[in-house]
Length: 358
Image: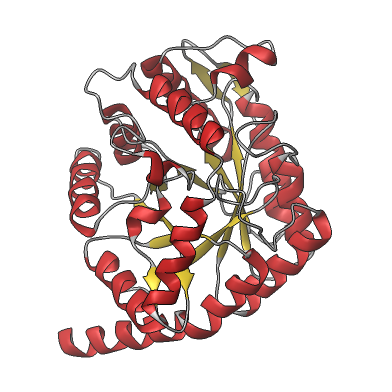
């Protein structure tokens, strides 16, 4: 089996990766992020995900735009792949496909996109864009990805959808290697889209058993189309010398949570997901403590000593996870610590498992 891949959340928005007043040694400045990217690349991370946010929200009072910020990081690294999160509705997909093709060529095939269907209603309405219901947002995202992939691979590409249309579209140059397309979501619509269309399906944090069930379901949808998407899992890592120390850090984050912003965030995301026909929207089962970390990262349980965290990571790999997307409290220093102390242990455990099955 191939090695599990590691990614980190780029702190290109203020406030870090938790809705907490606990002091963080993290900055959203370009200079800080270049340093983080170079450190991540040096210590075994293969991907970085640049967040998309246009307006202040729940602690993210200042934001840098994702596609331009991603290219900044690509320009200052050599091997790191950078994923720019984008919203259908704010981009015309064929125009974005052209931007991505150019970035892919000059970066040496290291640019990727994460298509985010959206949960923040105010952001759409304040920017003058219509807010669609849940199922419509995912239908739009499917068409968006189809246009991206068609523009990258097909001459005279014509598409007739409900949201997007192209006519006899031919790009020169087309990318020699198409940018990877990531996608998240927890609803049945999101899972079906992941199985049918996306290269990578991102999952919010969860227990090993919950993630195993989700992987199995999405793999089933993929088999209908003769394919298997790759699976990425969100996690918030707190690695310390002792388990007690690591758990104390998580408790301090929660104890210092900005309660009003956590509640507002919870109401917004649950309202966005409530339009699902089956009640499986993201954050549907998240309580206050879970919501302090934006994507349920505490649920993944990457809290403890390097040995404990490495073992839990391998447990997720066994149930089908291909990539771990990590958030940290003090991003620069904890990326380095994780790369030095945890990734080598994961590689040892992977090698031991491979020898057993050889």
